[in-house]
Image (cartoon, rainbow, N blue to C red; front, side):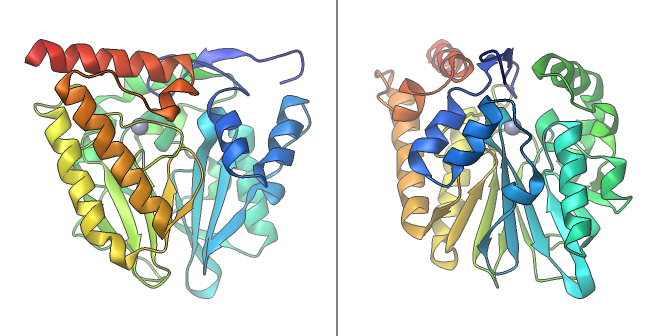
Length: 307
Ligand SMILES: [Zn+2]
């Protein structure tokens, strides 16, 4: 980002200032991010080699500059791996593929947590393994292909919007792949057919666009009961918490069990205040980008309008 921050659109269509906002939040929370972010701001290459970090046994995470988007890699049998929500730019995904190859890893499955464009990306460099999503998410990705391509094109340069629709509907609640057990927890919060993944052996919860340290809850405005859906999803995460040692959000930094509890509590507090029509004091909003505050204002208007 040499020459100063670049304006772009956030993952949900609002505007975002690159190299500010969410990335800065991660910097403060997670000192190891600092060098990477500074390199990005100086326009220096940020390689997947530097970005992939192990957060639990057999689970690697990369955080990309655009909205601090995370890619998660789960190691499987015989050099195979599962790639969840690879993002964001074509160059980043190609660099990720090169880094996986350098480590002797072969992508044998992909997973999209939900049908928003920044969670449906893929590139030929990752190979032609099946890319799964819940049946509802896969159907929605197909229905919203044009919309997702438009949003991806508006969000930032260098995004390959071609493969946004090529996901396969998952059958059952366990991902069929040659690797550790991956349980699919489908719920109605944030987007149709959104799924979190639970890795019981590694005690990891891959949360998709929930449980973020840098984004307040973003309920699905098109749902019949946006806040109720979100409440129910948080209840499910709370019920799972004893089996979780590490939570990985779709945007932001990974957290431990205490951080999981803290994020669930913060998200419940946020929803409670929105529902009650009270002013929300949440550092994620105060320090966050403009698009996040706009999403918040739209939710307040939606809930107020419904009441
Ligand atoms: Zn999303």
